[in-house]
Image (cartoon, rainbow, N blue to C red):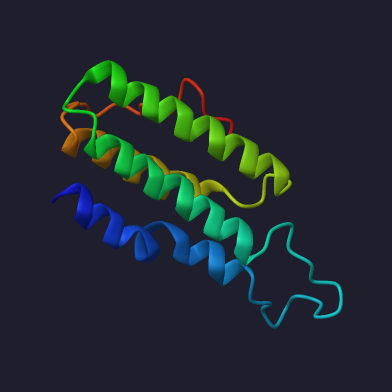
Length: 123
């Protein structure tokens, strides 16, 4: 897997459930259904993660640069999720995003199985 492969898988692996939540289900009260986030917020999440991948592609396997990008990305996602009343990134999305980030840092040259987001993550 390459960083480019990760970029291409982002929509199907991470963003799908965020978009699905925006579609009211039968048991939702149609008139009262107002999600705390919209398509623009999902797009912002996508942009944050794509910028992360682009930054990793320039990291030259430098651990400090890679971890700096992880921190910057997680903090940006914290701000976005707070803006969305903590509804954008819930359990399933958290697991998908963490897996995406951990896979990306491994591909970029930082070999680890640990959750590199945990130190800064509020979601």
